[in-house]
Image 1 (cartoon, rainbow, N blue to C red):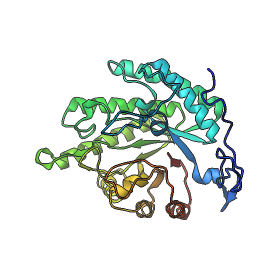
Image 2 (cartoon, rainbow, N blue to C red):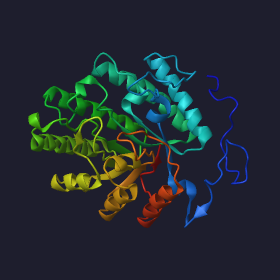
Image 3 (tube, rainbow, N blue to C red):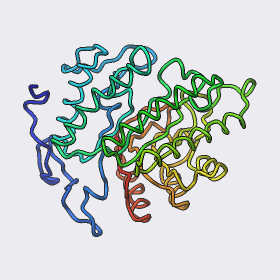
Length: 338
């Protein structure tokens, strides 16, 4: 297929004096700092959803993102084409990793069987592109929040059929993550929470969530997947309150349900803001429990009450984040995701 970015060459380090806007001014992948290259310290990852699936819409208007390679259909062919474009972008950006939700890369079908078939078809392209470029999968995950079936949660849904469907979806997502040699797998409970306590049996829902995660741990062993499991805290949005509200709440949950040895935390700066914490606070809480696994670098606006997923622009914030990561010994299986 023709290049989606024909006039853009691979982004390289040219130093702070370069006037070329498409170069790295400070990030030199091969420069050794404190015994490791910057590439190995930061382990940059391009996420599929922000970069290739976000239409840039808001509650008051339709999306403004125009992507000439995307024909606007929900077809497998379009998804495969998008995957090839994604790898061209990631390769030219010189990022060593990528990450995705299952529904980011492949469309949902009329039933689970067709949906899994669609995913398999796109995974073959992802595998080919990984082999061609050397780019690796940092982690995979399942989208258990976008479809209407998950309106009341996935693992915490009041409908047993929804719980079963979510389990099947995670099973398949784990299989393709394993097939692609992913280094980890993330659980983010976008709707694992409540909008009102008037009709919520909180203890029962948390018991169900723990049972769901134990099933995933058991299947991980059966599958032979050796990647790291992560849980990602967020206090609210889309629910009023999510059970994985911040690092401390997640750690308490993992300890209470005997999951602490199986999951580390994937922390996002914007989620820390929504929880009323600094990102450094969340990192220190996780690191103190030896549970800091990976980070999502996207930040938010401290004056707003919702998740804006902005690029980090504060050198003070990013320096504080890296100080904590360096103090804990650096990333192993995790990385810096955006």
